[in-house]
Image (cartoon, rainbow, N blue to C red):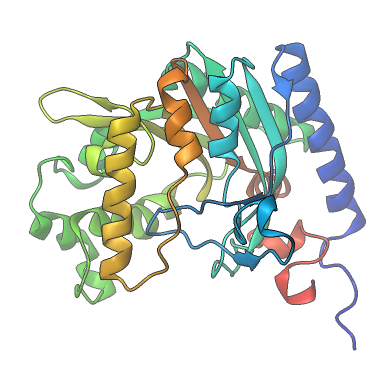
Length: 322
């Protein structure tokens, strides 16, 4: 057997350790508390585009639900801590997503997630960009920062308003790719415009922050009313690499239950697994203070720091060597 060696070199492994030290120092200076939450949960992620790993607990039934789910993010337990009054906090740890594998995906990866009480997503955008810039500087790289609304970015790129354009208008710029339209929704076409035409053009020395997404892509973000309502959500890119996803967090349990229900309905139509809804999160949400939160893919951040285009360069042992 010849694949016993790590795919990341010693320089990359040392850089990872230096990045972890930078992250912990960054938040210690800002009085943001590091916490640790369970990796195994009795509830899964209902997001139709994310699949969870399932495990069966063989111990006594009195210990809790036998079916357990490897976390895809520490979001739900972190919000329960916030609701309990812990204050600003973060977690740096491993998360798991089933079926995600490739040059930029590994089924297990490292996520940094943090929350700021009383902040909007715009304030958190600035802090996230500052941390990313510090990380790039650690590797001797420089980057400029640009923030732009989802609406403005698509208007500048394609000449139409993505919030009101017809599906035909959305499909037009993608005709050259010959994409099979069967089963694709409006949001799918918006995502394809991003992945196929916008992301590849982002300069490698640019930190791009896109904010205020279509309301249909709200996930766990608040909805801001307007001529067309938008989700108070942002994403961060370094060059073509998507690094982070953040929200001005929803704390309406009734609305969140409805969103979980819509997720499960979509999953049912796709014949996907129906994970149990996190009732503990829903019980905590009425006590969740106004806050903003963001999750950063640490492995991808390391890729950006090293100027690499594949995850194997920053992982000791990727999935095929684990």
